[in-house]
Amino acid sequence: MLAESLRALAYAALVGLAFAPLERLFALRADRRTRWTTDILFATVGHLGTRLLLLYGLGALLDAVLRVSTHWGLGAASPLGALPLWARLPIGLLIFELAGYGYHRLAHRVPVLWRLHRVHHSAPTMDWLASFRQHPLEIALMTLAQNLPLVVLGMPLGEHAVVILLLALNTVFVHGNLRVPRVVERLLATPRFHHRHHDADAPAANFATLFPWIDRLFGTHDAADAGRIGLPDGADPSFLSLLLTRTEEPAARADLNPPGFESTLRR
Image (cartoon, rainbow, N blue to C red):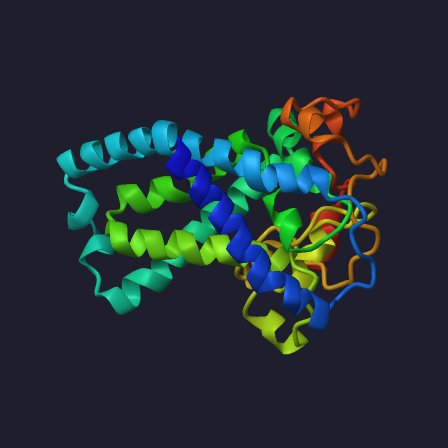
């Protein structure tokens, strides 16, 4: 427990040391956070809870899936496992990202998933620290959705860990208050791209976290700049309220898109 606590704190501290100075130098948005307590608690206590949940719960489940898939001739013997490293790693990243995109869209449509995902959208300011505002149960579900295909398809553990690390750092990056040249957005998600997803008054869009062209492919891309960040009602609940998923928001609010939103984007 102590070791995991230290790792959780060290990770949050290192991320802050890396991103906070950059946000001062290359700020995308003029608004700055005025409240720190909730996100600091998610970055420390919440992050520790997530690590323990993944380590002792999800880790055992994925290990069991690996054993079963190996027994049935998948695992390292699968087509993905047989590919050379230069091909396997980008394919693994793509599978991971597509699975995350699919889960993310469901999280905006399925009421019980939205109750968890709403925690993340309650952040009223976008910066590196806001990336930690995620419910531990949602992280577990997202982790399962993204990692299960790679485990079944036999991606070696070392390369699998690289994929997870890259996406974890990318999650911090896209939430950061960082100005990035727009040309980058043609291939990779940027803070400007993802901040639009957190716009309180805009239809839900930009679900990808690494490859924005996935949103273009599925008709959910929105190129506009973000406006007001946070929940539609402007609420900024406490850490405990968010952890308990207390909300007066009706379950129907899970679908943030008005009728015809996706078809409109495809035109």
